[in-house]
Figure 1 (cartoon, rainbow, N blue to C red):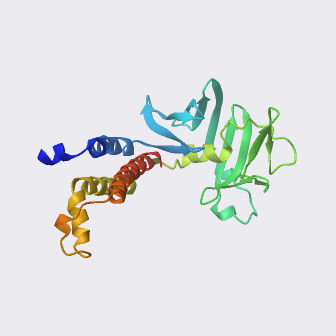
Figure 2: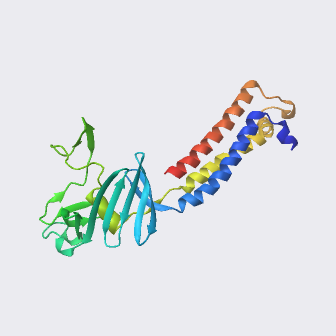
Length: 257
């Protein structure tokens, strides 16, 4: 208690802040890391099940994004007020193109939007996803779009892209239904980095004078009589703030990655 009373306002505030961060993020990390989901266009969509349907919901570009997948392979997508689908994803071994270099490793699939066939052919899901139509044509799965004058253009195509850039791609629909790549938020290595920074920051505050005199033992004869200079006091405060800020950054980065 005497030690606490001897501290000035800044170290007290930083110690309270460090303790609050430790408690808060120790509670948040297990909760958030236990929630599985998928990454879609850099947004994390949380997975849940309800009435036999699988839902992936989150925020994308400030709007609510929800994918709903049925056991039969039907997918609907809601982005804000816009609705997409229903899409249907089905396995069909007869759709695999014959005579193609990937014939032996392709999975036959068919993707529809309503009654319209979006894709029918072979799907190679490993690494960079590849789509090969039933007649042997290979689908371009790379897409970089830009918007200008209210129009959307694909940099890999000479003509204007006709599809809605917000609509899910065939490759994504296939992965969503047949091989969803589940992940979760919460990188525990960054949590422990934040914990280490918190401990170092608290120690540098609580034992500031002791550390100062310990370091002087290698430089002067009587460190107990030494008084810290203005530069030493400034350096202490800077290091306290640095460790606190680094701890906060590590905690937050671990939750967002």
